[in-house]
Image 1 (spheres, rainbow, N blue to C red):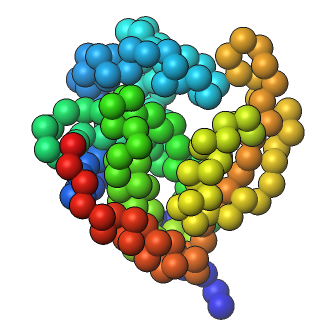
Image 2 (image 1 turned 180 degrees about the horizontal axis):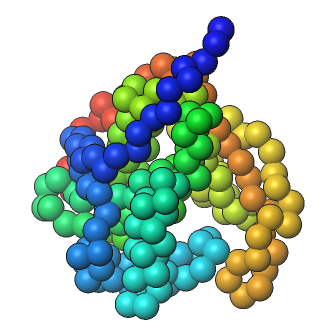
Length: 205
């Protein structure tokens, strides 16, 4: 079957769920992101550390510059019960003509880890990707040494595609192998059902 030949528009949008709201990233979020992203351990698996005023400004600027170039759509993550910014995520590596994008650049402050925050963020992003933008493919990737992230991506229902060996040089000069996962539009209904079942269990912060 021929694919959709139109090019999706990755316009800034607010995505609201039960527990979190994803808002378009803005420069004015810098102070709040510095406050909740001050622990360098949050960025252990990032290519570069983002903790601190300078690195966090670079993280924000990179996201906004990529957005202007049509390569990214970055968000801040707010918890609905208190309105607090607790992290960030984004669509990146956008390939509009091929109807594809990556979900990544994701981090959350420690006190919302092991809560429904990440599950609902992924649900909101994937739903927007496949049901609004009509993408063919969403990819996710992580450091081969990050077993926690690899397990979390697999639990979402993504398929591991392979490992890019010696893919990049990261913090401390280590050479990173990167594990690639993907979800296709054909797989989305099953992945959606899986995520919705995970989010059915009530949770109170």
